[in-house]
Length: 539
Image (tube, rainbow, N blue to C red; front, side, top):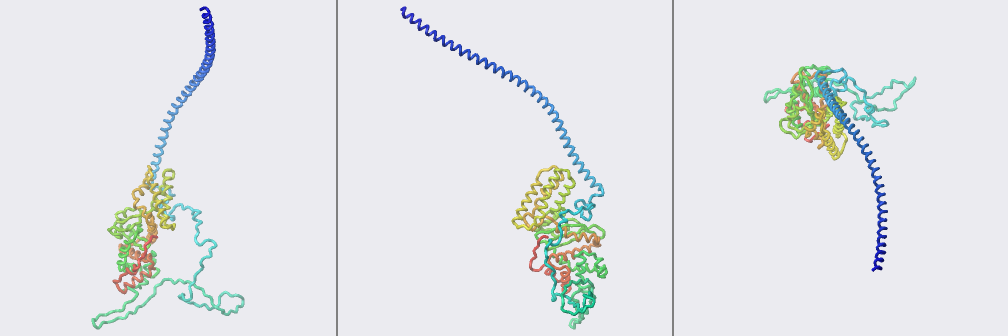
């Protein structure tokens, strides 16, 4: 028992020693963990102190930023108010400029440096005519330098109207004592001008008596109307001078030594006889694919009147009326619907006509350029005009490029898309909206040229056709009676249409008068409209 107790104490002592070592190890570990915790605590304390300092700095910065934000917000409100005010002032300034221009136009206020008709002023009427551009000065006529040319083509001896021999010796001597003998001849072809003059021709016409019926008959002068003082050839030349080349009647009468009243009476007489041909020309013209039409001022006995033209390359019809209303073109085109495209400006007198219309792009281009000149400092207007003007110019010149049909149609469709894209862009400027509305409201009347290369998008052919009339109006001051205007329109229409269809105007009129001389009821339509068709194309 005692032995076992000692053993027990030994084991117990050993166990306690082991536990003591374990406790010592735990104490060492606890001391190590305490040191680690103290180090961590010191580190965390330093981080907290740093974080507190950083928080304090951020709070100070935040306070500064809040103060600045408050200041900026106050300044921003003031700046926004200033911008709104500037915008309002700008709009008011634009409106004031437009009102000033309108008032100046109404009051006709001029400084003396403006052109009388604005952008439409011809070069002869411009107050300050600028020098020609370098590009235009470089466009010189004639052949290029170094081109030899085709040379002069002379007529032959058989083609000469007169053959004249010059056998005398030359006046310039070759030496002091010349001794000349002829060794040959040299041909010198010369065109001589014979001034137009009247010849006195006495026709001795035989008289006959019919033994059966008892009537007396007289042979007819073949080249003159019955009772006429002037032959058909002379009358044709005189009428052509007056009504084709627009020479003043008084000037022609003085040159020909003819009484002015006689000349006017002769014109009235021939116009009356040619009236059926004039009516038939209008009837045939209605069958065309398209026509150009325009009008300009005229005078009749000091009163205001108007001259009209309806034309293409096969017809030229002139009308002189005291009205500018739609009833005048109705006389030409009738009151029935025609398969015809009428190329005009935007004058409302053509609206009631039962035809398709193609509006002139040149007039629209002129309006766009005028808008740009009136407001050169409005960037919205300038940008719009600079985008649209090149497209309109390209459309006007497209037919002159000689493109194949497929290429033409492709380019024309692209131009239509580009023009309509520009005009469909939203704008708050009244000037831009006015131009845009032309395309938006009249798109069906603006792009016939896109589908058919033969149809032009401009009315220059009619403008050029009226130019001689304007010159004649300035020289002769118009007509003196309704009959004078009627005579002028008949003779001008027949002579100009004959020229369009390949005839010499004077020769054609002479043939027509000769036919009427032989048969007063002769059909002159075959003379102007033979069986073979004539193609109508634009200029």
